[in-house]
Image (cartoon, rainbow, N blue to C red; front, side, top):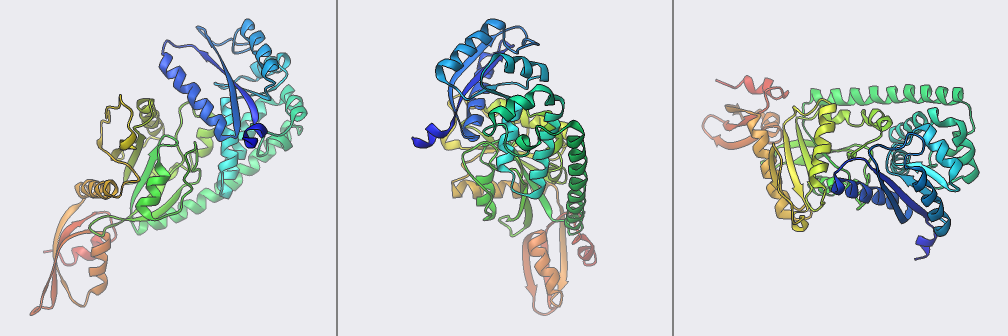
Length: 418
């Protein structure tokens, strides 16, 4: 209880411009979850229905007065708006209200600032924060420095506020240079993996769909898992062994979210570059979430924007034991329902993945001399070996199975093909 008292008291503000009441409600629920993830305590929500948001103050004049009274009554520290505010909206609202004001974008940036673990993750968050801040320097600096600390000002936010635009532009340039070096390193690492041509599977999905939970259990890894939005920021890759013994690489990625701030799409595109190299996508959807369909659509839309919707995809509906009463599978791709915590379900998923991988492979039937021990062991790990028998009199192994034609093993294999 004491912890809750130390949290910032937050009023959430939303403006509904479409007829879709349900979607608007879900979006506000998500804002409340994001606020809790950022260690804020939502104490009230103020909404307004309008044809379009007010260009001056986002909500109408009367609502601003109402918000002012509510803030004074509840003694709220912070007001969070459910959209990205323009620099002029922020300034006008700051002049009217005696509390710190941030928008959905700043809130997401703040969570990312808390979550980034790797050097690259931290740099990308700082870049996104500075790019967001640059057009908003006038006026807001005074307001934020006066209130100092708390949600929306973590990371470089506070320390950079009073510095001039040139300083920020220099820092942006510096970060971009550092990031390009990191990207080159990763490209080299990726090239090496490509040369060794491990089959790559990328785990994608809406934030909090259970990706890290599934990733950890399929690979025995230790990716951070918690029932929070954006628990994973930095991509992590681990080996996964399919039922036949075939070795693949599985990558856990940052969670997608609707209305992802544009500064973040640009900044985190490079962490999603991993996905572009994948041979197969596992798209995880939380079937217990009432807004599961919207989440599924959001991810598919972002995959299109990244131009990777052509990669074969399996839609995995997670949390089947808690699925929403209105849940209906809507995937246009191959799909299955599982609970990531159920061992039997995970085995079936591995079986299912193997079936999809098989469809991408070619059949081989070879006789390999017993002196080729290394090749036999490679066939067990790097192909799907269906039959292996030994001919004593000829000292050869009869091997039948399936292989990827663009894998490095295809060279040695062809030497023994009839």
